[in-house]
Length: 295
Image (cartoon, rainbow, N blue to C red; front, side, top):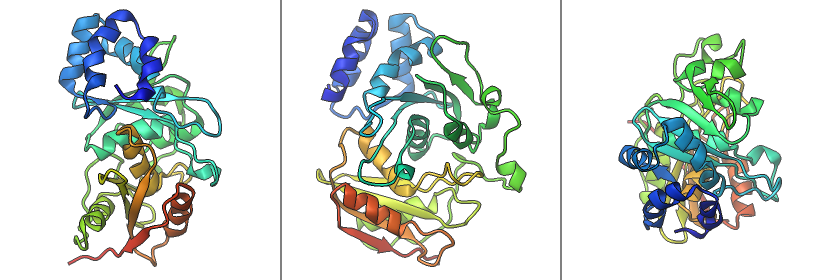
């Protein structure tokens, strides 16, 4: 079991501890559950899906990197496929507050980067802030997305975001999680190709400034993140943060060997300066740019 889960594990009910211990002990556990694992946990504990997800929130919150707030938030995005994806807040001392990742953003992006096509429910241990409510409104689930919180009935995003403003108000038909392929040509080494592939699947229907980031960890693994734009602009998630979510969920921390950013240098929005600054704060100065081209 990864050390970050050990304390949270002791707070779980005994039957859930027994059921999930083999899952947490697996070397490849990356903070997500397969449909079969979810079904097995329900069968062994007798909990329905909402109750099980709520009971697992301490494990999700244990993934938080709350260096500024010291306030751990955990979330679980429950996909239509039956897979569940953990998420947690991530904060970065030494850079701007705008680089922060909220738990709901983390769980949703975790699902998106594993090609989940649609979310049914987001379970979170604290009421979603306005930033996260707006971020969730970009999803192809829309305001029908269920929100499940401790000690209150589950309800829809529409209840938390009345009179919402979203893509439809700007006549945008693309939605976050709906698969897209912008068709950029692969080039360079494996890290550059991963960044370009991420840019090809990024969600930027407002600016058209597609971008992707690929990180090589000190262990040699590659984590690629895509830009996720929002109709209200500010809740947009940069591609570096998306890649950092994957790296964190995999339990690798933030030790980065090198990075590649794929974007158009003359795009309306450019990620380079913010990406470079945040990477430098994390101790990585090896950032390369991969240009996006089409055949």
